[in-house]
Length: 390
Image (tube, rainbow, N blue to C red; front, side, top):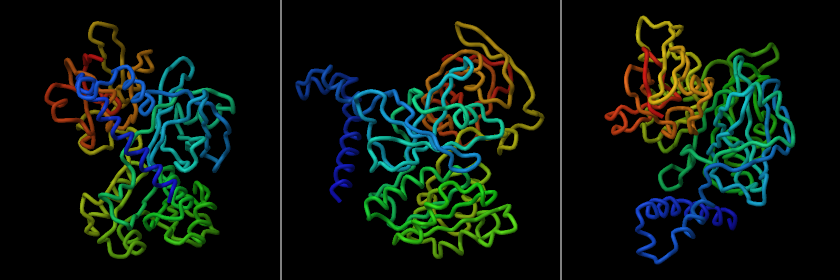
């Protein structure tokens, strides 16, 4: 309990740091507290660093397509604290193209000397292929401070949690479960994990061992394309499979993380089971693999259209309609500050001066930004020649 109390205290301090930052910006705190603004800035920067330098301590394979990378601080300062379920962005340069990708932290916050990310290689993955095959111990990367709200909050969540994961969506849940095992306390956790084949199960032996030996953690593996020797549950994560495993939905908080198609299926199933929206937490996992299949994509556009993107006061380039604008910018040598790459954090926001773009309905854009013509380039797709201000 001592560690948990310390962690909660650090989290409270971090939250307070956000308030302090806002006060410093307006010059209020220096007047109220008679503190030197430079001193306050140093304290807040320590709690909320923009980026930190990390060194790869080790790399090891989880499955044929998934790799875990352990990162340790490259300097004397420790990593900033995080809450199980949060993510970091890793910044890198591949063949002269500066880019980044967010990855959930799969290690628990109880292990403070390192952070781990687990990467699944995508068939056409520009970054995932590099991370899975080219990264070696000793490599250096800049990483963001931990971010994200896909976390257990005892003030608003119930004490019965249901985790629903697909593929590499297991990673934030691994952090939560590992923390619960280390602390020997916490809410009850029922975990439904769906994969294409039994060979795709990440952390499989560890999770099954935890479910067998730890009180309060239950696991159900569901395989959609099983091999001949698979004797477990087969199918998709639909209403029947979820409902059979969880029992009554009342009093439970649901966390969903996985590919976009799984989100559509699982969130629909939860609504059919009577789960209120406030009891469903979701974690986006990047832009959709095929935006032309997303609800609302305009008819008549194939995704192969090519348009001119002009940067206000600068250069221009050609971009495909089915490629996220942020990716197009990076391919053309332009760096835009970003974090989630899923349309949620808003750090990459840019002004749309002219033209039109498609953004999925799930994009978490503020009403004020929408009213004044701002877009999130990470999930914006050009539907005409456009001009943007970055």
